[in-house]
Length: 192
Image (cartoon, rainbow, N blue to C red; front, side, top):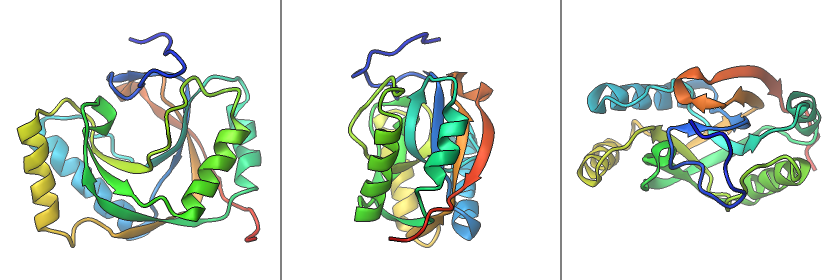
């Protein structure tokens, strides 16, 4: 288990993580569709079924008052949309295969607000690459390509867009099997 991660290290390479993470989870039919894709991949490849599709807003927060600050952050954000931009993956446990998300102005703005809000608390600060992981695990290159092809050949299964309307605050300390949701906070900000 990793006890600390260097500020510029890649925390997504290990199957263990640190701190608290803020997740944006697809609602409605899109959330159900992503959950089904994740479950099917876990069954087929023997990977972890993490059950909660999400796009990470910020991660590896270590301060004692993350929940209170996330509540305040939610008052500065309104529900917004993510749009898929294809399937990708890399040599990282938490990003083995994922749905890339377009970096719209709204997506960039909300991430910038969150990063500024938690600037002193983030233990890692990699460039923001909005994505929704479909597989947590160490698949080899052939397995990744096989899975990507299955998704691409059945495009109706992968939602092209989805809305998020809350911040889910997750304890992401340790192995993924031990993670849990601390609180779900609705986005209540006013449209600008």
